[in-house]
Image (cartoon, rainbow, N blue to C red):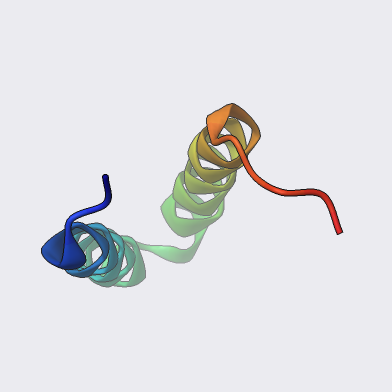
Length: 52
């Protein structure tokens, strides 16, 4: 069962991560965004969902 505050925690973590990335120099940001993209893609693929 999904907790109502679980999504808030995930969004808060994502926002915190984005704030940290944005504070970095441009070259480092590109690598950090690439890493974040890979992490989010793996999580999305691992999450069971419904097909449209």
